[in-house]
Length: 311
Ligand SMILES: O=C1NC(=O)NC(C(=O)O)N1
Image (cartoon, rainbow, N blue to C red; front, top):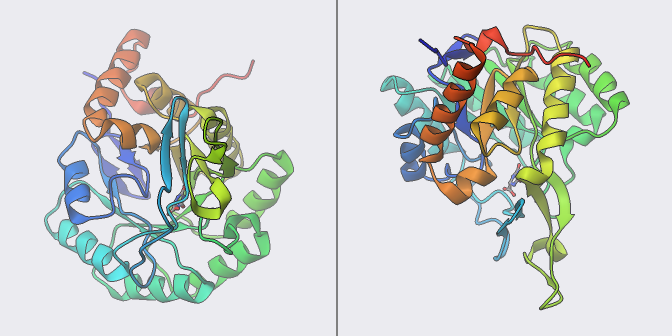
């Protein structure tokens, strides 16, 4: 019989599929709907210290080949998501990953200190790659800033910490950042966040399809799958084996899930396709992944994880 169990930093998932932070996870109702689906776990909308309304609308547009978004971190605030994560840890539901996106280094550290002092023992995902807060650069493109936040976080944080990274497009960047990341006891790296600051135009109205930032927003979906797979593969080839990998980007079918796992992902997250199809997608993806594995004679994810062949 085919088994889809996967573990990440000692946390076991019955199947490797979750939502991507930000999609179908901003309220307890949405979070419950993902947990009630065939997903193996759920990740919360990236929390800021205080609740946020986010950017002006329209701020999301589904597209034939993916999506563009400039949400601007609308969320119920850190306390709400920490409470949800703790409650569901007690209820022993599928794992809840708590995503954090401070608007400053101080906010990142303040939230991590609160998690450290809390009863939450699960996975924490520090989002270093939101491209959509006007005036805020993506921290993960500034390697000195990444070093600062990890240096200061690991002075006191002893729980399971992963980081959400943006796509990198140059192998020298993977080499340089891996040398930094390998110095820290990271639980995992999640690659990729949306491809930042794309522009989608409506030729009829001669205007961008979303309003914030003059129409500049993060690109997701089929557009980014080759870049997502390359980032998963590049990190797997460079990071210590103790650092797990979550693959995110361009997942719409069981074959897409299979490809992320083949590149080395331990878990796989779904954003754009979940936004359009809803949580029922997790049953479809589980069915399709199982069919791919059956066709190839694989019984477990370990039979093929990270085993992309070299041409
Ligand atoms: O990290 C993020 N990535 C995105 O693509 N969008 C959200 C957001 O804008 O809140 N944040």
